[in-house]
Amino acid sequence: MDFDDTPEEAAYRQKVRAWIDANAPKALEAELRRAGFASSGVESVDPMAASTAWQKKKAEAGWACLHWPKEYGGAGASPIERVIWSQEEGAYGALSSQFIIGHGMCGPTMMAWASEEDKQKRLPPLASGEEIWCQLFSEPAGGSDLAGLRTRAEPASDGSGDWIVNGQKIWTSGAQVSDWGLLITRTDSSVPKHKGLTMFFLSMKTPGVEVRPIKQANGQSGFNEVYFTDVRIPDSQRLGAVGQGWEVSLTTLMNERLSIGSGMSSGFPELFNFCLEAEIDGRPAVDDAGVRSRLATFAVRQSGLKYTGMRALTALSKGETPGPENSIGKLVAGSTMQELAMFALDLQGQAGVVMDEDAPQNARFQGMLLRSPATRIEGGSDEILRNIIGERVLGLPGDIRVDKNVPFRDIPTSGRKG
Ligand SMILES: Cc1cc2nc3c(=O)[nH]c(=O)nc-3n(C[C@H](O)[C@H](O)[C@H](O)COP(=O)(O)OP(=O)(O)OC[C@H]3O[C@@H](n4cnc5c(N)ncnc54)[C@H](O)[C@@H]3O)c2cc1C
Image (cartoon, rainbow, N blue to C red; front, side, top):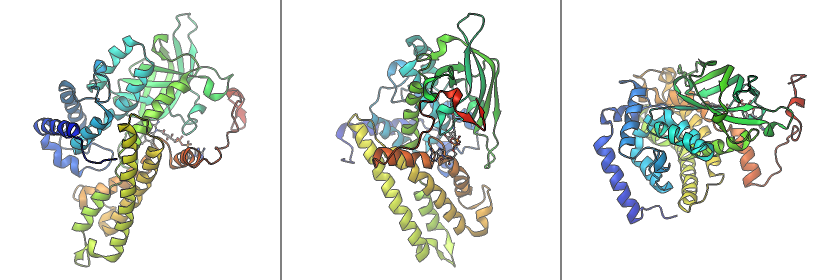
């Protein structure tokens, strides 16, 4: 691949740069650059308000959801134009973190499966940031093995055609601030697990939906438990046919892999800068042979990540769907981020245990360390990604699937049938 812009790409970049320069919330730039990973990191103002304002501004000028068609609030841009936008948006991109699930996963799923009327109604407010969406997939018994989920949707007994939902979801990011959710349920337990699922979308304000935030190790509550008690959903909010939920969920999961895997940073530039500033025995840490050796290892991995990402870009620029590159990228970036944060904390000595804005680098590596296990789980855990790479890249034998073709209700759970 030629990494330089074509004349058209250079002109597009110029246009993007000029608009961002004239419109971005510059007062927040330094704070956003200092921010830890996976959070907007804005503390001087309400992060939600800052996020919503930036999204609204982008939408009004036609820069929201670049990859979506124009009629649904997007810009109909090419994948390369989208990459150029995100390179130019830089630190301000962190302001969009609360929209990643809606824009990257729920929106594309609605586009593929909802009625034209629902697409016209639901997608523009999602693109402009007026509405936030969440992904109600994982359950205590359905994570990596999502098809093991137990939340039930049954036809209402009053003949209305509505569905009544009972059950529990967990790890639902952003549910506490979401207006809408994409919900996968079990509608038939007499068939094998993948075949008895049905997908819906619903308002998070529907009676019977209860959101309980989960307190995390870093003090934040980014995700939640969501309980459903006799929640009534009209049949018109079903996506796909009854029993076709697995197929619908694959649209979401494919887009999730593209959203989460692409262009992940491992934190190497931040570590390198820190090593220039930090001192060991009165000399810059970067002069220490041990530090240089670790930096070299991280630099090699960082290059591997960069060029693996470029391979995905090459596929996109040719109009192809990227292969397993994003699985490789996420697998390496997640563990590198964790190792790198631990190394940075070691270099900080006693200050490494302090999580305070006066700590070195405003505690960004502390935040990175506490966040990294989540990165290694969300959107496919390390082991699941290794299975994907083993099966689809290396052609190794598939994972053992003992419940294949077994009716869901006959799969034993903790010694009883479910
Ligand atoms: C930050 C974050 C945000 C999330 N946001 C959402 C969200 O918005 N909506 C949502 O629905 N879910 C969300 N999740 C949940 C996420 O999708 C699940 O945590 C993930 O799929 C793993 O499922 P689990 O937690 O049930 O772990 P399990 O599937 O129970 O896995 C436990 C362990 O067993 C290993 N394992 C499982 N199966 C295999 C196998 N076949 N071979 C080898 N090892 C295996 C796993 O790798 C893991 O180490 C989020 C998770 C995180 C961390």
